[in-house]
Length: 442
Image (cartoon, rainbow, N blue to C red; front, side, top):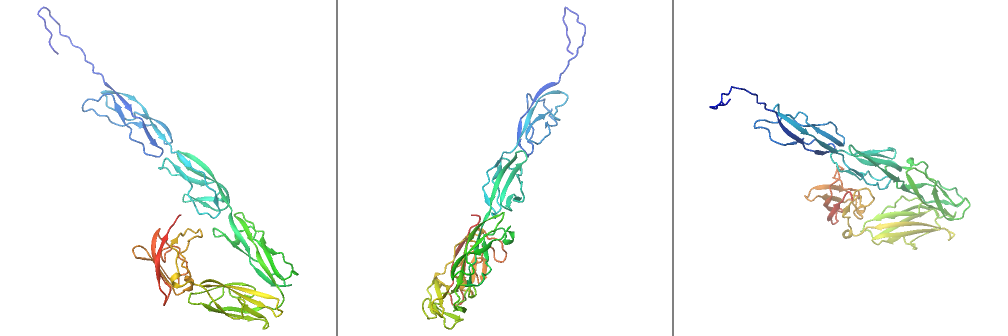
């Protein structure tokens, strides 16, 4: 204590107390935001004045618990500066925002369409989007894609935690099937043959057993109908997954005069299908080196006359490409006739054989297989396909237009790009080469 003195006064000694109060520091929490599902940001604060040298804050701010989108208070938590300070804490908030889910309208599909990914997205990519179907008999969700099981209507719902859910209606139309009555023939007065039909257009591995009702076929001809041609009309099929387009066949009623053909053949070449007297249309193929064929016909009645393209000669010259040969049998009475059509294809010359240069193996019926013109006419062929590095990716002896762009022997699809090929048509034939481009998902 300092001494106090004055020559004119006598001062008694006295003592007092000095009180040191805690220092007040204002702590202001800083507002924070985050997307739903993200980790909390670091909770920070500002201060009005700095503490004395050597004094440091301990602990940290905390927030009210919760993870759903909303606002949560940031509280002082364990933040402290010791007994020498009073913290004037001013709170702030942590805001959790949810994602914004977007689900565009679904384009109508058809039974048999491939799996597809719905047009759904979210502004918050950190949280998975869940898909569900309200009618799994119509469509299910497989690996995030819609898998169509039947024709009908189904609601597809996209949901995301923090963003809610959106439903879209998917209309799945029936696929189309063509039902064609097979052509038939019978003798006048004979009972009708069993009328049969063929189906085209089944999808998803379906067959006639999947129909509710199979088609039947009837003819307008009666037992006493005169010789001629009559429609065979198919009808009556039903299915929950298919619509039907019907194409009539032809019933040929043949007069009883004998124009029976026991056998019919072509040399060189083989008729397809194998000869049957009731089948009047055949095909055959020969390579370009064959410019003339001999038609052999054996008749049941030796008095019947067979003309080949209007001539008694059995030899027929062939042009490159399609050749139509008409075999007409006239009965002994000179009136009753029986005709057979042979569609004989003579291959193009070796130098004219080409191969497609685009392969799009997506099972849409267009360019799904690599096609080499007339390759079936050269069964001793050898085909090799190379990638840009010169590696063989496909090779086949006796290639018959079956390659779908898979790596040889593995079934693994080759990547999109350009590949190169060499086609050897066989002994004594000149090979040719070129390129092919594989395009997928177009």
